[in-house]
Every structure is written in C-alpha cells, then in structure tokens.
Image (tube, rainbow, N blue to C red; front, side, top):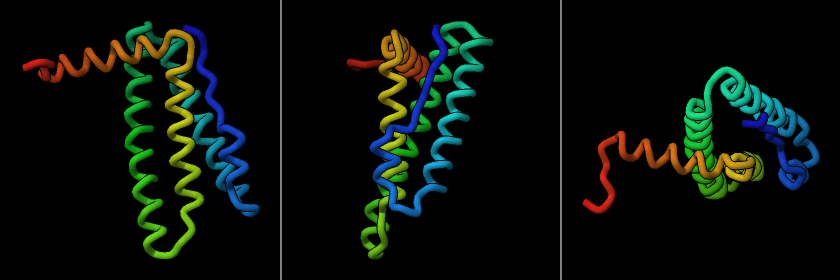
Amino acid sequence: MDEISLTVPDPIVESLPADGEDAARDMERAVEGWERRLNRVFEEGDDDEAASAVVDALERFEDRWEQYDDFVAELRAWGQSPIYAMAWRDLMAALMRQLYDHEDLGERIDRERHARIVSDGIRPGR
C-alpha cells in the first residue's frame, strides 16, 4: 500500500477565530502524529496489519467525533462558543473521509470491520 497523507482541510483552519493559530498548530501536530503512526505500520507490517491499524484509527476518530459533537451542545447550553469543538469534530470527520478515499483502503476497511464483527461473535441474520 502507498503511504498515507493526511491533512487539515483549509475550510477547518479558516473557520477558526482570528486567535486560533494555536488550535490550528495543534491540529497540524495531531494529524502529523496520526499520519506517522499509520505509515509506520504500513512500512513494517503486511496489508492485514495496516488495515487493522486504519480501522483502529477510524474507531478512535469516530469516538472523538462523538465527544466533540457532545461538547458543541454542552458549550452552547452554557452560552459558550463551540467553534473549537466544532473544528475538532469536523477534523475527525475529514480524517475519516481521507482514510476511506485513500486508494483501495475503503474496501480493506470494510473487510476488516466485517471480520471484527464475526470475531466478536456477532452473527448477522440471527
């Protein structure tokens, strides 16, 4: 598999307030770290290990997306601006989309997720 390249989409950075340079920098560092970890697995492991690592990352991004989405409602309820939580939530969604769009990774992700369902003992149709 080819190396994965993850980015922080420009619209997310542009959505940050004028004083959001620190948040943008934090996002860049986080994305670089996730990209580095995934690419290390791609280099050292086989395709099955790589697909497993990507699904692990996707599950983490999905969990974080839900957390940030909850923060948006909570911040609004307290009369606070949810812009940073919204930006991080949107970043999680963008990273998930980037992983699914990477070459044939979408198909491998689906196979790995189905394999996990079966190995957990859940049988569809029963």
